[in-house]
Image (cartoon, rainbow, N blue to C red; front, side, top):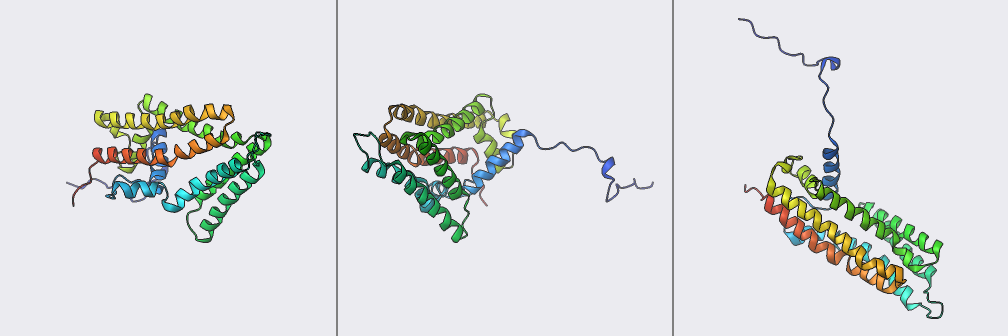
Length: 253
């Protein structure tokens, strides 16, 4: 009895069956998972929760880059506020804010640190400042943040309602299970509520800050923006991390 012929080591590409490309959910999961990895959020990692949250915020440098430009704007605008004109020194406030963001970016470039976060912050700060200078209203320095919160909140909410939680897509990529988590009722339920929680965070920010924007209260708006930033972001990162770790307990070696 003769052996069956083996396939050629280098088959003709024209004879090979077409391989389906990655689906949209897989591409999105890979993008979200990659972003989570860059932020230090890997469920397979055995790092303690506090350490993970600290990495997600970027450590001291990330916190300073996130907080100081907005803080400087609020403080300078408030100190220079003229009740008669009902406005602060917009040029000085925005100039110092953008200048500080630029310094953070230069430091990252000089120290050869990943500059993406600082560059993103600089572009966002400069764009918001340009809008405020164009309109001449200090509260317009926060408009881009409203659109960002609305976009993120809508994305998380829609993903939960249609059964394709963004959290689930990211975790599925990180844990090398793709979209198989959708066949597990427990995982689907947890990922649904995590996405709802993140959507609620962005919705609450808008609900609290928009009335202050329309009232033109720059000091209160800027202060609440800072309070509802990292202080709310960090606990939700911790809750998300703990929930995912409960679904995927680390394997003991």
